[in-house]
Length: 135
Image (spheres, rainbow, N blue to C red):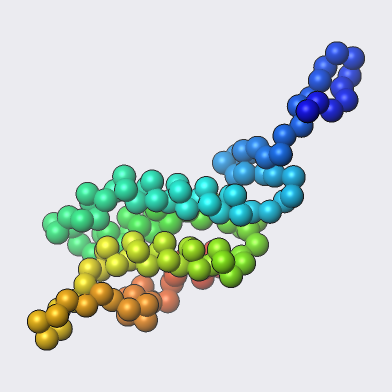
């Protein structure tokens, strides 16, 4: 679809486009942007998975990698987001998946146990992604 133009210049009207790394659309919703950011964060996660799985690297180094590479890729342009409950949950689930990879599970009474949300929150000193975005 083309809008009016000057002389024979025609400008194409689109429903959405990418501008400076952010998706802008006609409805001004940020759901497509959020999905794209989670995909980019997942790509960054898998690109560094060998590093995150390594037993030679300390947990603090892995956490620093997460905060500088993966989280920053995920939260780029988050200042403009409207944080709805659905996107908050998706972001927290994504973050917990990575944190569980970093901190691993614990063995209690000969049974391996995955860390709970509260344990993970305590390990990162309540500095989760949502608090980061809101700050």
